[in-house]
Image (tube, rainbow, N blue to C red; front, top):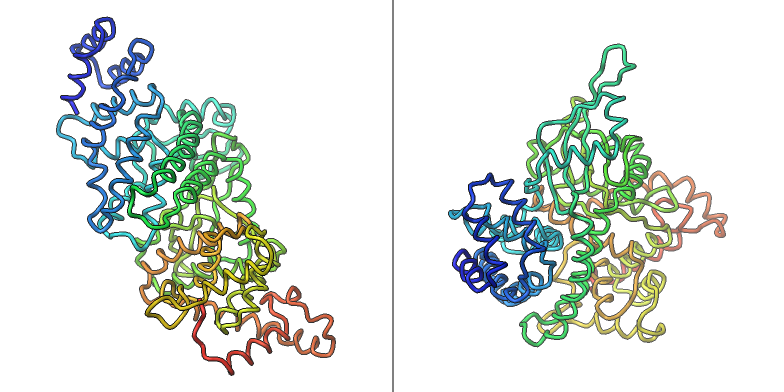
Length: 547
């Protein structure tokens, strides 16, 4: 990379070369050097050297080598994507990236250089995080990617202090807020710093611990550019699909996920609202902790309580019990909620789930980072359960009815949808069940996986339903890391049996009043008629799912 830099400098016009050589030969501190490099934007033009710079950065960071051999088909995709981005970003950001590479030092490893690269490109940072949550990727590759989940801190605490002071300076002084001396966590969009809050009116001067989540100062500008680049990159990949051995990999859908995640993370007002809703949703579940925002939060800063816990994968308590409690909190509590619209955490990866020791209960689970959350209506939840029952009993008409209720169209009338479901239910070559039988375990996973397949065939579903599907798939990796033998079906059925037992008096009463026997009158979302039909089907059919 240094050889490329010298070659480019030597090729520059004299008026551009002189300030660079003067800077390189000066004896200044790293921070002064950084500021001087960024100020060169108006003095030099790197447009002629974009190709050489991009190639040098890709080689120096070893970005293609980070992809293990098992995924070697992705290496051309990674190279072309990195090249597309590095030749497409603004010159100001390219100078930042070049500066970050020089600051890593001559002896920096490719991994260190790669981390220095992605922290100034939020879309690559977020893409790496999303890939890290896939339980099917190579373990060594995932280990590297999980560094992004833990937060790679490089922003200076003084920068964060200045933003907090600007946003809520009056509150800081009136409430005697004392900030910590360092950033405790950093992600693609925001940084987190802890504080203590000493209420002046408290007789005992009680200290309350909390954290500030702060949008990094350069992120808004970066995100605007990244969103446009992601659209252009998806179009580039689609046009050049024949150059890659990736089958029907959906570039556009993947990049939509990245764009959605980035936009939500940058909207702190939305996250503050979600935390309040989650606090209300879980108010009766003593096992779950939801951090609550302080009233002096703003659109750039969220002040919230500090959760003193460990990342869930580092817990030293009963992991099997923890898996059950976590599945119930994220999945079954949402499916069987009393509320008309039930809330769910949209991104339950391990970094967003903390374990807090509790003297009475043993442990509690804290769900943090509510930048992504969604709601499911009773109708949607009832239809998801109906879809699952149709898959259990191999009943095409039940599956079709459930999908019709859930979908928002997209491929024509019911006949077209029926044809697609028929096609998906046919056994793949060399198998005895539908094409999804051996892909996912757990009836809920199979039901959501069917929705996934239908999306690829052009069926449209509500955005929150698709987010729930992704949340469950993300949660799967966490559950299996806690308990490799975790049985989601058993957990779901046990939960339903408890509900059915509670509902039995009402169900007996409704036997004599069939008009009151609506699935929406029960938390289990299944009427007496539906339960009877399901029971008969289970007794008269072979229990081998179509999907």
